[in-house]
Amino acid sequence: MMLHYQSLDTSTFNVLHELMANPTLKEAGFVLCGGTALTLQLGHRMSTDIDLFSTLNVTAPKMKSFMEKTFGDRLDITSMGDLGIRGFLDGVKLDMIKFPYPMKHSPLEVNGLRVIGLDDASAMKLHAAANRGARRDYVDLAELLQKMPFERILINYQNQFNPSPQALEHTRRAITFFDDAERTTTAIDMLNGRRWETSKQIIRQSVANPRHIQLLPPPKPPLAANPHQQGILTVNNSTPALPVTFHQKGTTTKPRQSPKH
Image (cartoon, rainbow, N blue to C red; front, side, top):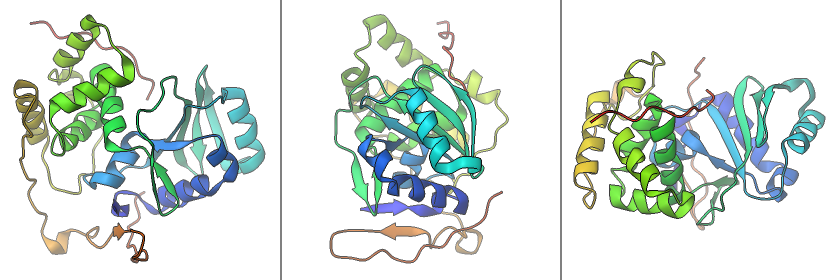
């Protein structure tokens, strides 16, 4: 399997590998989810935060206690809720969450990383896009729609969250409502050259034709302008990891209003 390590900066890469190598966190069932899990598999944008989810019997106070004892002053916890903690480890944003729904597929295990697969990730990303409305959620969803039809993502979403018919209809409508995303000013460092207008086009066409993959290949960046190109890591049972080239680079979800039709 191919992981796109060029989508992580050096700090995120180092923190992620340290967390994944920790035997206690492995035993507690923590798996990489969120945008970083997707960018590692799709390689479409930079991602600089880490979301670790577990479906096992872990609690926020236990997470906080263990992380503080293990990492000391390197860790800055900024908030703790019913299901997890949020903070920074060596300056890298970190969320650790007790995920209240069982995963439908086993995570991928590649080169020491435990990463949620695309089917489970697609369900979470659809939920995030419909409820949070961040531009990066739509960008990620558009890239997923280059790999699987919208109908499959909807099935994954239904299997994961068991939404009511009303909630499912809200989700269908909300993901073609881009106003919230377009009010955000946070830049997204795209690695494949895809433009925002094209991502929106992919989503609209996929919702309109849910059984078909809307293939719109991104423009290829010029070789000289793409310092990330050597950062692809290929791993399988017989091939050792290739060298990886890195470059240096130096929000609470709330329900959105349904668009009016």
